[in-house]
Length: 349
Image (tube, rainbow, N blue to C red):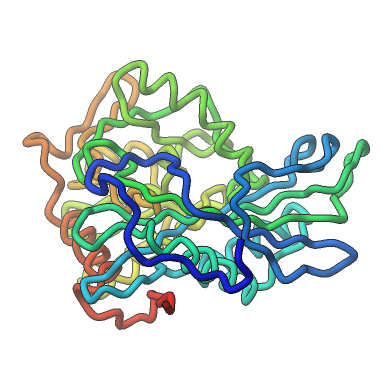
C-alpha cells in the first residue's frame, strides 16, 4: 500500500441498489498496534487476515470489542461519517470495562478518516439507499494461558458497502418476546459492545426466525418483566398520546442511533423518556420499533408475548411517527437537511 494513501476516486463497479447487509471486499483496512505501553502510527494493508498468536486473549478470554458506524455520500457529493465521536467514546468505555488499552479518541477518529478516504470509491452514490459500513475492532493479541489482560492490542478498522439490514428495508417486522434466553446479566457487560453479548443472542434469534419472526424482544435477566433490547438493537415505542419511550437498564448497549432519535423526538415535541418498560405495556403502545446503526429504524409490525399478539401495523406500513423520525434522521445523514447538531464528520478528499 502506498505511503501516500491515495486511491482512485472512480466508483467501484457494484450494483449499489442491490447490496445486502454483508461483507464485500474493499481496497484496504487500517491497523494500529499497542505494544510496550504505546500505540503506533497505524498502517493501511490489503490483507484481510489477522496473524495473531494462538494464545491471544481475544481468543480465550473474550478481550475484544467492536463498533459500527456508517459513511454516506450526501446530496452535495460530500462523504460524511455519522457521529464517529460517539463511537470513539463508546469504544473507550467498553475497552476500559474489560481492561483493554483504549484507543485515544483522536486516534480512533484518524483511523476512520484514513480508511474511509482510502476506500472512497466504495462509498455508495447518493440516492441508492446504500451506505459504507465501518467496523472498528479492538482485540487483545498478547499470549496468555492464565486469565489476565493482554499487554498488546490491535485496533483494526475495515469498511464494506452495505444495503438494508433487513431485506425488506423500512418495513414492519414481526417480533417475539424471548423468555428462555438471557442476553446479558445484571452488573455484567450488557452495556458494552463486546462480542459475547451477540454470541449469547444467536440461539434465541435463530429459534425466532425458524418460527417466522425477524428477531426477539429480550426481557431483563433479573425479573424477566422489563424490556431490555430487541435483537441486535435498542427498543423504542410511541404511546397513544404521542410520547417516545425507550427502556432504561444497565444491561442495554447505549445506542448512538437511539440517542440521536431522542434528540429529534424532543425537537418534535414527543416528550422522550427513558424508563423501565413493563412487558405488559406493549399492548397499550401505538407504535414500536428497533433502532441501531445497521437499520436506523426497523418498525415493529407485531409482537408475540406468550399466547397474545399485539399488532401495530395492520396495513403492513410503518407508523406515522416512526416514519417521521426515520425520514428526519436519514435526511440529516444524507445532507438533505441541515446538520444543526454537528453530527456529520466530513472526509476530506
